Length: 475
Image 1 (tube, helix red, strand yellow):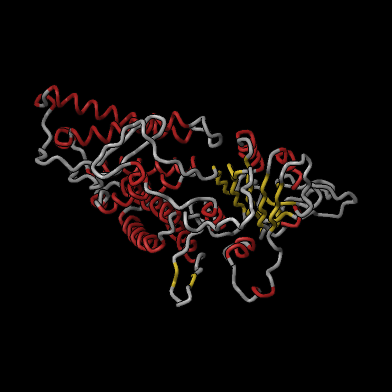
Image 2 (cartoon, one colour; image 1 turned 180 degrees about the vertical axis):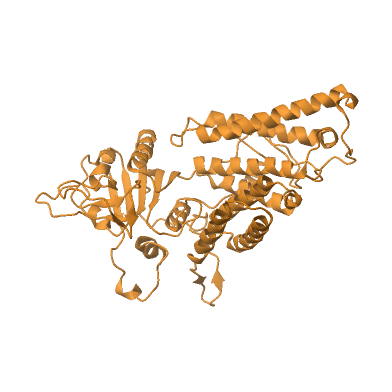
């Protein structure tokens, strides 16, 4: 453990939560920190109270952070007040350790990696707030915190400790940082981070006889496969590589043709579901989910740039201009009950004059026999997760041919949700099961179905890492 030496040099950064108005600033380290830790009798009462207050804030922040996993994953309102309290406590903790750095260094023995842990938790808060709100500005803020941790080498001295649990904290930080960089399309930085993570894992496994070596090697394999799965390059007229993004930018939206009228419906909610066998993925995010979620987002804007003018402190009541993206749920290999729960929650909270989008990238489930009546449950559908064994995409469980596949999302399962405007994208080998999708309630319904075979002009291409609809969409 090494005494803390320096804060982030990021004067315009904030934690801002629009419910509570909490804000957090990075300040330079106070000079002249004391060294050595005295006995309890030597500690003045004021300094003892400072340490006690810090320990209280630290314990409270950990308690609130650990409680995040118990919040409901669906619904828009149930979790906001809890996030607000968590942001508030981390704001107080960060300011407190800045204002009392000398005392904490001297009397508490504050370590550099401990400051890094607090900053890492703040980055995680921003990232999870992005997942909850789909606002990419918070993703940018998570990147800022993770970047500063690396630039200031807050975890550097951890490798000199004989404590494997501290090294694991560092490895997890790298994995989270890589996820954020992937979502921001910072692929060059991702490759650098993967190299550093590989070296850290090698050092970790050599120094400690641990049981998680295979798990960390699998993390490396997954992220390497994820990078390799996206080799698409766009060239301009001069054959120079053009950096492209699937996200919407202010200048990238085509103008309406003359005479066209903007519709009355707005895309408000989306379920992005990935349940393909043997597809490239990293951290429960398949390559198809990765591309589709970006297609539903605007380019991120840094919150600090959006909220503050240089040299000024924004009042808590002032809020950044809203740039709302459709709210999204990312579901990796959900069971039928999980999928239906999230779908029902989105349906329930869908605002008026809004559309719900359902993107299904999943293994096809085909009917086992011919039925005299061809209804919405007779063409199969797409696979939902279960505890059964799956061998090469085929289930080993046997059932009566008259029975329907229970671990499958049939077209008929979506019929109740056509009571509101619905946009369905099916990216599956059995997408044709949805081709006769019925509109029972007179609401707008759109179905986009992936081809079941490649067009002749593309049959010589190699697309092993993503689905046909994704390929078709990109080209």
